[in-house]
Length: 114
Length: 114
Image (cartoon, rainbow over all chains, first blue to last red; front, top):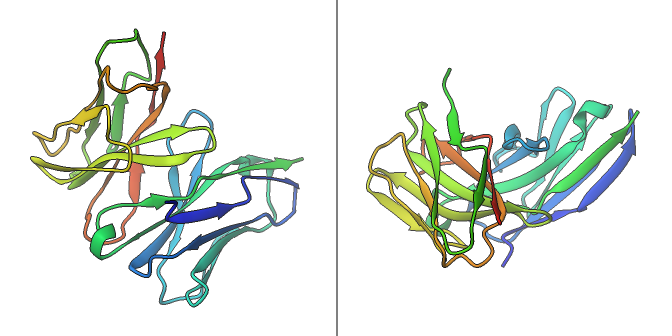
């Protein structure tokens, strides 16, 4: 059972566009929601993360929106650039049976055309 | 430089052979993880360890084994029982497995069965 569901699987935007990637979860024990960015042949790296006590977090051109009641969170990339072309993974971690584990979505392959 | 080192970067295995993937970290992190990445499947957890001399199975542990004899090392053995071992393997670590913290990834090992 997929603990974190991510969509879309792939996304193509023009430079300057605002790609949005969505994730949903069911387990209310989750209390940490990071996004990772991965370039081909490399390991993922943390991009931005949020905890459920806030509804939005912004770091540079990257923003996480969090809806606790809907159990959904999303990544927005403002003024997207060709260098943002990568695979993005959302994830969730929390208490109880999920302690110590990160559950990942299946990833979104983003392509930004110049 | 602090970080996670995976070796080798590329590995070829004949059918029926066991192979061991190395993962070393000098971040003084307690928790270490092994993930398998296949196209369109995201990151699937194989094994994780929250403390030396202790580890837990993840979602796809069959055909794999691990050890955690030292804090900085978490080698993964892909046994001949793993029927489809060709994949990209990622090792990660985090400072505190009891709460949400950044996971740092290595650069991966690409295993191919020949």
